[in-house]
Image 1 (spheres, helix red, strand yellow):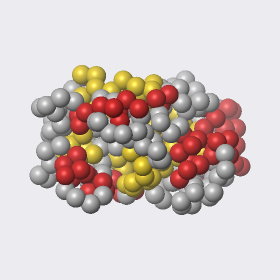
Image 2 (tube, rainbow, N blue to C red):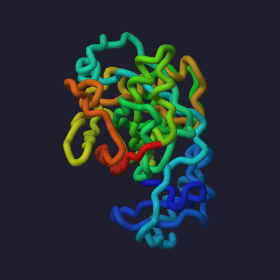
Image 3 (tube, one colour):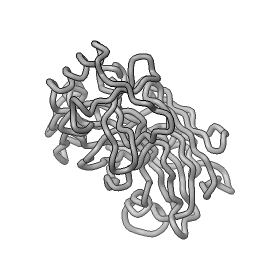
Image 4 (cartoon, rainbow, N blue to C red):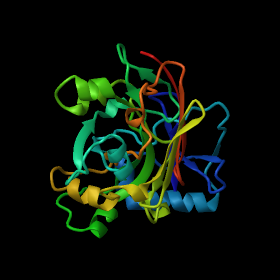
Length: 286
């Protein structure tokens, strides 16, 4: 299923994208929201599937309707750095021996087409198309790839927007360059795991002002999704509704020749992942 949340910010209602790929169906009569509690409730998910198959769900008029983040009440966002071979190469970084972990605060999350703010005094705001893994079952000390994938509730597109000067040149950890306001557009859909049989075979693309910048595949991940989930579960408990951003392929501004084409107000970023939809953001000054 393709689950989403539509409406004004803070007042979104749960919805389903019909199998025709265009019709929105209202889920508010069945569930209160799309969140970790729903993903952990197999009976509720089965009710949605049955209602969708019967055609009984009300149609939502999508004309002019905002799409919000597809997941409410995110617990934590765990991010994996330098997780693509080509991205490590373009930035001159060594291939990590273990996954690099950092965090983004859930309050960085906005809708897939919402405005993204270039921070004040920023000169190196960058883009990163990423596969987001949404946890569906409580995970701790997982032992195998199969067990890890069984704890995944679904997948979505994430833009791990980053300010490279704040991240790399200002001392300390990466978090200063990762947690600026609006720095994690998510969605448009939360695609349940049953619709993504192989998370290592998804094409990823990102363009800036119509110019293709990133054209990669999750097949290039250093640590695949199953290993990332298994590994992270050794160090922290993952709960339904937690999100893991799994890294970005080559093509970010940081990895390009000088003058590097960092983002400015007025720039438009468009990104997509195969089967997971597309995003479009206009950047404005904070």
